[in-house]
Length: 258
Image: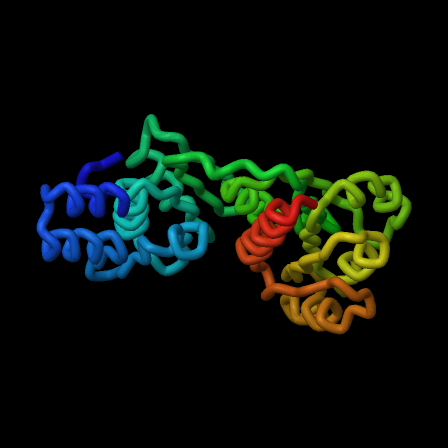
């Protein structure tokens, strides 16, 4: 680990031993909480506070800005999830971190720079996509959950237009501790899976559909109006949010021994 960023325990141990003055320790601890890069103020304490580091939303950022944020995070011993990346950003990050462990998924516009593996959970996050065109959003959810330490089982192209395809996946539904379901059009798949599953379902509306789908609004409203209890809904296209929440739920199940 970069010695510019000692662990809190190391700082306190040096104070206790007399090697570090209290005012120096206070300064060091403040530097461990945030990193002000001018264009970004990184929350370096979020991992300690919430168990998961801050993610980098890359839309609207330049490639050098993304690289600078990611570099500061990994230098602090944290992993860096980068979402909604552009082709230019992905190429630049891959070049800047050549030789380091980088997960890249162009279809999901996702990058993950791993400094230390997240603790592995036992429970499975099941990620379902209604159609092939919903896969990029589903993959963002799956990759996020994996980056945070959850095993993921993917089941794609099982929309309600061919219900028999979904029914063949009953074992996958039963195995999951939490389910993420991405769907466009009328957004019916999460309700159907909610009626089959004992696990909570996180529904992700996508923009897939014809004109009256209103760029995902029809799917969003359909999911919000689900008659199946146990279905929650994230924002349109928010695969990252769904994957993050799925990992949180999975972690709760882990601590409860379920």
